Amino acid sequence: MLPSSTPRLRFREMTPIDLDRVATLDTGGSRGPAEWIEWNVANYAEHGFGLWVIETHAGEFVGDCGLTMQEVEDEWCVESGWHVRSDLRRQGLAAEAAASVRDAARDAGIGHLVAIIRPDNAASQGVAKKIGMSLEREVDKRGPAMVFGMDLAR
Image 1 (cartoon, rainbow, N blue to C red):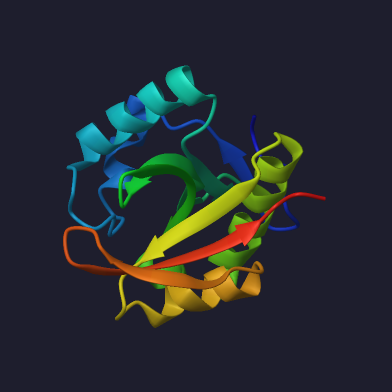
Image 2 (image 1 turned 45 degrees about the horizontal axis):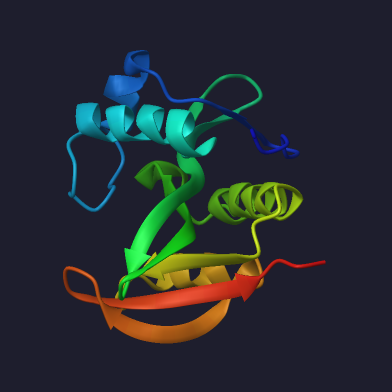
């Protein structure tokens, strides 16, 4: 279930050879780069999705974007997540990738999509809004978090 390429980006599965590139991302500190890759490879096998590497059509590493299963207040949800290299932010790349991921989730029959975002992360809140999500609730998930969401039914 790989998302479709966009005008500037393509997607591929993350592999151990991406270790140095993944280490450049701010992924929230819950896992180190090697564990991050292992977690995503396991997600591909178990769920058919995970966070995929996003890169330019010329092969330049941009970051990651995709779907993961996340527990929110004792309920398992499909979450869309994105991380872009700091030097490439504010160019619309996260929103472009997230929109393709949203469409892939819809095509796969996922009915509801969420994004769990820290209150101080205005950029990610903007990405969520750009792809059609709205704030659903605030929760405690290892600290304060905002849950943006959207129904994907056609």
